[in-house]
Image (cartoon, rainbow, N blue to C red; front, side, top):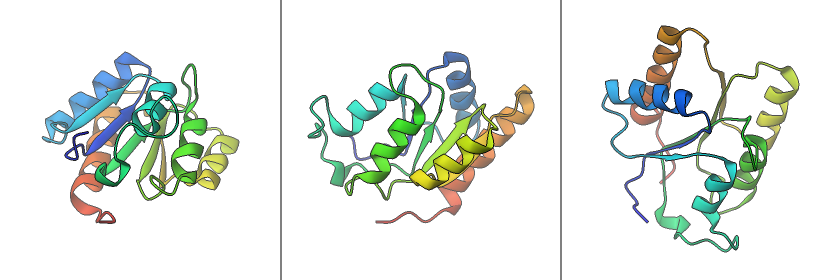
Amino acid sequence: MNSQIEIILIEDNIDDATLVIRALKKNNLANKLVHLKDGAEGLEFFFGKDDKGTVELENLAPRVVLLDLKMPKLNGMEVLAKVKSDPRTKAIPVVVLTSSAEDPDIKKCYELGANSYIVKPVEFDNFSKAVSDLGLYWMILNHPVK
């Protein structure tokens, strides 16, 4: 697997995914991005179909995972719980990027180990700015575990 992956976007809504990718490209932050279309694809990417892992997780060190909550097959909380409970992936920063501003969702995500929780702004320009700022923080300012 490509150890150069920097951003993993797990988002089922193609319109939201397109907006996220466009906002990151605007700041030259999407060159090393992988888009996975639902929670099942997300877990398969990290752990393989048999949960033993098809990628060498030690070599997979994305700077950040952007994770939607409301997805078919497996929801974002299930993905978050698995990623944060596995010693091979728990240090990978996971940012929940969702439309849910519900307090129980926010609380549960932080309990499961989310590094940040961002509610998607409805208005396009605000959404684009939020994603740009998010990308700049995680790609430029944040210092990941090596």
